[in-house]
Image 1 (cartoon, one colour):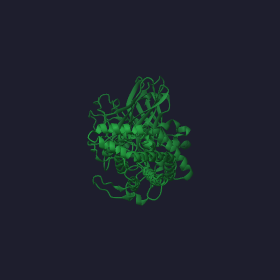
Image 2: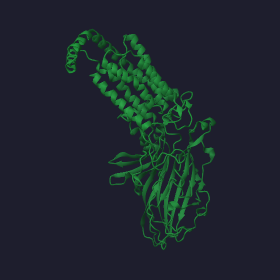
Image 3: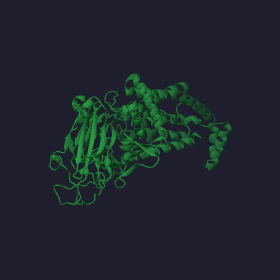
Image 4: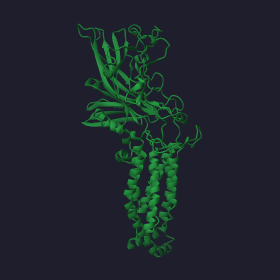
Length: 629
């Protein structure tokens, strides 16, 4: 029975591993030009009715630098907050850095300099694709180009420079309001407020429309609003890391639901790909985009703002502009919105409508999201957990449980690497009684097989010309003498697999391990250990770094596998030979994975060697099979 299970299980594992290796090292590269993002075809401009920009800012029509920097003072670095660079083009955010997080240098030369750069959470994918910009994709408010008055090609609001205007209350109560305005000659004024609060991980966002035309009747303005264009990564993406994604939280039937779509390297379906659309029975809660460790979340602050969001879509973008470009491997969030343009009441000068949002930009930290202020965002921390593992239903639950254990250990020892070692010892120690029981059952089985071997050899000799008959007689003989391999032979490996897969899932998604050192050269357990830089080259298969932990892992595994004497049973010997190749396959598969997982595997392999010696000493038995996951 056990041999049939083993013969089925091991080819499945090897097949899955080979598939992953093929995708990692041999899969063809995606071709095609990087896409800039959606650009709607705007209608032709009606020169008779088209408005102009009222008192445009000076830099609109002059070739001056586009950046309009507004930054929080440098003395706030090291505390929660933002360093923001705004831009008058569309009145959006050009870049946003988190003042209490640092980015890892991408190349060894920068690492040697020991410089610290603030982590840039939001950055433009290319010039002009800025964040928190409204796009008039239907061309409702196209304006004349003053440099080409007779042109029928109008300019939309996202193509215009907005005017920065002073806010009277700016700087009061630790708050600072950055306001951009686009005033049109038809009496419509668009305003956008960014309300920054000292020490906060959120900022307020207000989209305002002022109507000063008493003849204009109430109507609706439908537009697309670009969220964070790119949640940038602070280091090159290691293997098996989930790509950036767009997500939406909504309520349906009284239950919280999460919809998401990832930048999977495939082209956009048309201009946009739907993630969520409003419909009866669904209430929008919040949405945004996230990479491995950070997220931006936009949440409406009132019912009118909630109703204003009609749809959330993803557009896939290149990973980076300079250097190596991977098409469609990053993403931006686009909201389809509707905002009322109110009619001016009799006797008043203007009518105003507002959409109000709160925007979170920060880490996907479970401790932070456990605070009352951010508790509703806790599902965002589970985005990469909920994607599961390649063959493991339930890896999400195991991963979360292991993270809780690691946190408990870390609270005591203060080092995440040591915590992983303690977790490994705990898991393998809990499995040891089962392994000893398995060894005892195997010893009893081998003793019976030795005693009955002459009779079984006689059956084989008697029916050697008829294999089918021989197998039937052997099974009958074993049944009569009650000689079968222990059914629990594969159980230890099957029980350790959920731990391995839970760690696999947890280590690629847990913010807690970001930039956490262990010892020596291992300064980030969420990244490969990168013992030695091998140089920038284009040689196939050859890595850019020598990662020592996966190599040590393979050495310990191979040592453990080859220290076992060959089994006497042919089927068990075949299984044993197959398992001797598994360390090499797993080592290659996990070569560029998080060093925290490689550390777990190394400690587990060392434990297996020690356990084998104990088993041999107590049982006088050679283990049959590999249980060193």
